[in-house]
Amino acid sequence: MDFPLRHPDRTLALVDDTLTRPCLDSPPELAPVSRSRSTSIRERLIDRLRRKEATIAVVGLGYVGLPLALRFAEVGYRVLGVDNDADKITLLRDGTSYIEHISAASIARARRCGFQATADIAAAAEADAVIICVPTPLGRYREPDLSFITATIDALTPFLREGQIVSLESTTYPGTTDEEIKPRIEALGLTVGENFFLVFSPEREDPGNPHYRTSTIPKVCGGVTAACLEVGLALYGGAIDRVVPVSSARAAELTKLLENIHRAVNIGLVNEMKMIADRMQLDIHEVIRAAATKPFGFVPYHPGPGLGGHCIPIDPFYLTWKAREYGLHTKFIELAGEINSSMPQWVVAKAVDALNERGKSVRGSRVLVLGIAYKKNVGDTRESPSVELMALLAAMGARIDYSDPHVPVFPRMRKYRFDLESIALDAETIGAYDLVLLATNHAKFDYPLIQKHAQLIIDTRGVFLMPAENVVKA
Image (cartoon, rainbow, N blue to C red; front, side, top):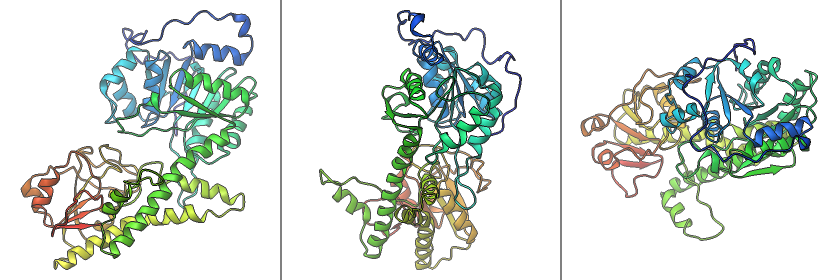
């Protein structure tokens, strides 16, 4: 992540002078703390964090960083949001949200509480705590790409100083915090655990989930040293309802990978079960619903057209790569990854067969993809299998359109380019397509209308429960 480096003393003119704290729901004033108990650098920093006198800088204002920054502002901290995307900064300064499930009202509220947005990473010089929330993608050969993390740390180093804490939230392999970040900090003459503090606390955001908020999702935190952990607990304890300490940063890093690999492996299992059930002419969704009635020992996972989002399709490969350093071959994890990665091709093969049975070639057929977000009821298209389906079908000569109420215009993506806008659905429009491919089951879709008027439906989500001549399960 490349940031413009400016002088740390530069005044930040980021919000109107009228937008000042205190926040509407600031906690009651804490009783004064005797300075005699706050003589060390660590104790002074913990004191500032607990009294909400500390300034928090959140670097990376995406699906993880922005809600976290808003939460810290909401509870009374001064918060500096840093991102190198000038468009995001402009929107935030205007009080506008660029993430669907985050309201403009919540941004306005945070600004009243003292939240400031900037593209100038020199703002970190003002911060007592710097929280890094940047992407960790895969490289060309599915190896970990830490370039966003290392570039961010390198950009921060001119502005780091004694008495700060840095927390990494980006998902990564065990050892990253100790091996990549700590040496860069100590090269400045700082000593981690004594006059500077470093923790790893993995993000756990679930965009669009109405049942959990940033504040209510327990936060795992591991320090490079015991002193680092103590400061980390003070940092997150002021904004998160429950903070879960672990013995080290490496333990926290592996915790995050276990969470996501657990999900990836189980989805791989049900995707393989789906292919078996399909060959047996059984409905896997019916089978899962029946199995889920068992009150113990079974957790339902649901198959789909592949894995999407920035975590689940990527994170297993971070561990498999690191495991080789220890002489281990993670066969089970890698096999699940292969199955999940193969699902878009399997769905396309089902679509081609269904068209052939109706005397149509995929080449020249009009195909409407329903839902290009990676999961239902959000507008996030990162690593979406829906988009891979579009690319595969387009490469075979199909004429592709899409409809997604959460993604009105096809976004900029690293791998895929489509100059398309979302199609509004009505009876005539639906009936004009040779194939309607349900890839993401948004609640806003009118499924009875779709089933009534579509010539052919490929259902990858088990939405259409009853057998129908124009519905093919995939």
